[in-house]
Amino acid sequence: MRKYLYIFGACLAYVLLSSKSCDSDQEDNAVLQKNNIEKTKESIIAGFEAETLSDTSLRAFEIKAQQKLVDFGDYLGIYYDKTLDPTMKSQAGLMIKNLFVSDRVLIRSLSPNEKDKRNLSLAAFLSSDYFPGYNSIQIKIDSIVLTEPLHQSTGYVYSGSLKFHYLFKAYSSSDTISVSKHTMKVDIFAEKATKIFGADTLRVWGVLLGDMH
Image (tube, rainbow, N blue to C red):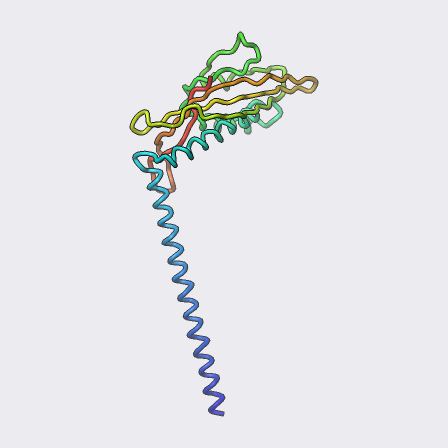
């Protein structure tokens, strides 16, 4: 009987010790994972807050600028869709403004009439009704080419430019207008701006669009 009690006691002790060991390993892994997350966060913040941008960062921002240009076309399609809820139009307008360095940038109008084409401020551009008899428009931006790589123009500003084609169509219940492709150019800027991350306020790098003509 004592022999069986001894064996049972030994097995129980092994299980308890193993359980503590597993708990200890899990705690160690949790601490290690937390430390890795903190290091990654610090690395990201350090990169965003760096005084200058590396070539790798500049190339990444150039790609991001191209994506913002495509987003601009998509948001315009939502903004000028008269069949959508006004709240969506308002939200799309805000997202468009967030793509640009300021409300004072100049954008060439979308008027299909060449005589009416002129450079407008972003606010004037968004207040124009280019196709009053149509319910919606579709804008496709493609063939984007980097014509001037981002380069440092002032202390915290890098500038460059993109060239692209755009094609748009206007739709009504009985008609469709298709405008042939046009080539345009847009300035791009990588600069520092104040961003709020939870309880922290940081000066971080971002890329934005400028004049479009």
